[in-house]
Length: 380
Length: 100
Image (cartoon, rainbow over all chains, first blue to last red; front, top):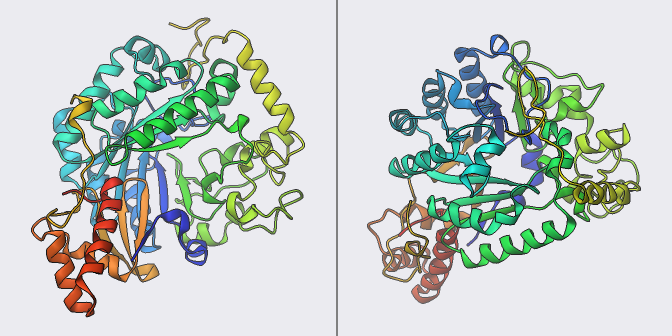
């Protein structure tokens, strides 16, 4: 007998229907984390899908075979209709994850979500040091509120994941961050080196650790994972720029996941809009299954036929799918090229040097994630 | 917050009474005609025998009970089945998909 994890699921099945949908319910967020994965150009509140439109999207998702919905943002708990959305989506048999900053929910609100069928809550933490954590998020007392929410999540018998983005301004605390997640009662911890898209790309120099720090943190996390076996599961995301092989971004373009933006655009990944020349369909105009199967944006980098060298003849092409299309576009201007995180990319040496030189300088002030308004000249 | 030392790995033996936590769901995936175990950020695809085991993980039956039931149903040696089930349940418990 055996139980296979999704990494090994039959390719044919995955090509037919995706398994997961990331729903960005809103781009509004009380936090201002400088590594936010949202686009720089964010959707406004008056562009957001209505309650009925989201429920319809989830009904379509369940009908086409999607199994898991990740309710994200921005901050999804800013949607006043969240409980209604959760209870409807849950009634369609979907497994629901809430990805939250954790600073807005009340105990009653948490209970209402659990009662509506929410199974899993993911809370981000910025650091194990409260002062530094609140500085990074630019939100007063956020740290304390996250700890409080973690208790409520446990109280109402939901699974808790802690997500800890790691970068040069908290990397020295990685061991304490792991201990904090254990104390919070997390079933699972993501120790995730920041990926440089969206706001993190803008703030790269302020976030990039040295190579030595990255390697050290990796070892600390791997040791902890061994020590915490059966107590807390750990997913470790390695730093892209210092890697030798690229990550299998999204499990392959248009293969396992899709992303719906607050205004209803359907993307193969949350950063896909950075690739110039791609047109994205909207759930207001076209059915989700139709977009998944037939839209140009999804078909553009599906499979391996679109690949150029060195991907085309690479034995890993069905494993990592050439890495990240957005990163390939950002560095080469052509999304068909190899992700420069790959050691086989002609640009690989350049991005390693870029990372090392940025990490060697003192960090510049953060450019905080804001919808509008003036950026601070220095950190608060 | 709990003390770090309070949290311990559950070691599975014949007396353990495993049950799926509230947040793990064994569900039939109609579109792909297979059983799936839905867990946070994970979709697992148990084979036929693993599904048979998981359906008996109700928190009442012990691993030993489950092994004897399945030994009878599949006409297989109980000792071997018990060892296989302990391995499976331990593996799933380590990942947090079963508790006992």
